Amino acid sequence: MIIITNRSVNELANDETMFGETPNAKGIDEIRLAKADYDAEENQWNLELIPEPDSLDPNNLPTQQLFNEVVNEIAAGTYGCNWLFWVHGFSMTTRDVLELAWQRQEKYDLELIVFTWPSNPGGFVIDEYNRARQAAKASANALDRALEKLGKCIANRSLSEIEQCPISLNLEAHSMGNFLLENYVRDPIFSGETRIFDNVILHQADVDVDTHTQWIDKVTTAQRIYVTINEFDAALKVSDVVNKARLGRSLYNLRGERPIYCDFSMGSNIRSLHNLALEVQDNRYVDTFWSEVYSGRRGEVVEGFQYDSTINVYKLLK
Image 1 (tube, rainbow, N blue to C red):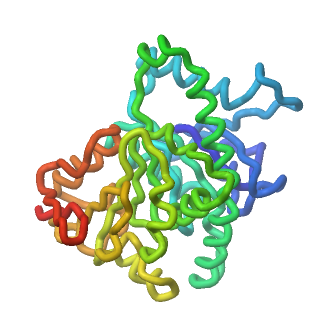
Image 2 (cartoon, rainbow, N blue to C red):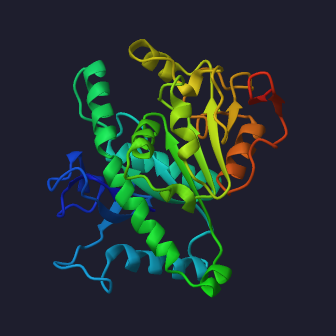
């Protein structure tokens, strides 16, 4: 998988300790790239930091070189065609991030681009939570830089290259990762960079439901925006103690014009789970939903969902 991060960097490391729990020493806007591979036999991660040349010019941009390498590997069959740009949530070490990304990759046959930010500042839970929110807000510029670079790489492809190597590129923001996304979209720096994605998924969003319509319709996509909801989400219930009602566990004010709201609350084996993509057991409708949206297709038409026009939501009833 590909790692994009504004975390601190240990250039001497070649495992998960390459990226720390504080912002990049050059500033929280600074991003670095790495490739990560999991050795299952040794149960260890191998990371390769992409070197930064002393002086950058259009002929030696690390992002473009890496992108060209990936496109060639897709064409050769080394990589698949379904790609997910994943923004994680609160209190995640680099190893946590890698493991959850790998689980998505394995379960849904995906290739991942992970945007990881310093979400694990430590300390007492409430204090750590507030500091992580500050880091999420401050990471909006770094996310902008990452998406701008990715967008330019995609724009540089010729029509023949696109036809020979079609891919589905989707974005998922999980939990507090949605607060990072919200601050990015609200910022004047946002100019529709999310249009490169087929589907954008706001997974159990740790953001205010009351104000989400002020920014969510500004998110641009090639296809759709999904908002997942679980009224019994235990993690967001804790977040409700120090915040207004969370979008990821609310069934009111679902009035965005663009989002497709999907309520999983009554589905089998959902219970109080916070990670609907990975933690739900023995529910093929849930698995099919994620397989579809991660492939750039429609999730709300999956068997088991029924539209409730009174609250503008697709409800999982199986």
